[in-house]
Length: 269
Image (cartoon, rainbow, N blue to C red; front, side):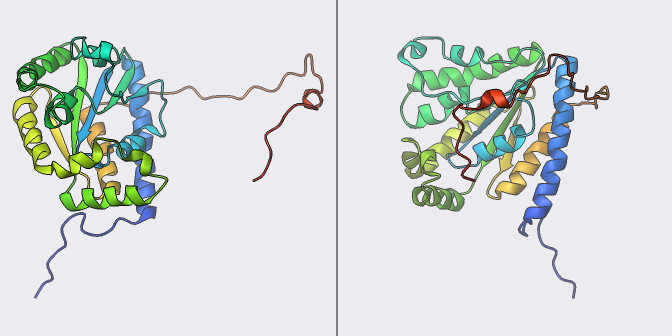
């Protein structure tokens, strides 16, 4: 009798294997970065999901080896009184990419369909209006040449509970607990219904949602990077070989000696 094969992702991913694959994918992100600059592409990547779904760690795995001048991260705070009086999309649009840029939104205009709706920060009329208008706004972006990628990180009830408890106990992670996090825990099903309404209205042909299962953080990060790479056709841009020039001795002097008497950082380590 043959043994049943284990489902993909059922075994724990070894740290060594994870690091090896991550490095390879991050190398491809560097190639993508050069292609985006070379072609003058404009890319927006939206990350949404429940609190503690793993957005921050996933974004970090994408951005830690590329230039912040090309891959720009936007994580906006709560709107000011002035911003609340503006057109809703206005505060986001000022961060949209120019040619040769990738802008990553750690939460986005979809706040209106998530936390604002569930926590009562917007009216039912505002919510319904945004559900109706958002797809057309995104079509305008895509028709204007922007590559729009929307990723929803889906974590389980059990895993969210575990991550919240870990944050509460770890002083190095307590800063991750925002005033909205704990109430979101009690409103699990309200957030689920808000998610379902959002997907029904805004999962379009021109700007589809991609759902990323994120209980296993390492696998989620690898799957996310590979998916992004698959959505933007790119080629490796040839680079000129760099030759390090020799130090010129013209106007040479003892530049180390001139630092004597200055204040230095204590070399404790």
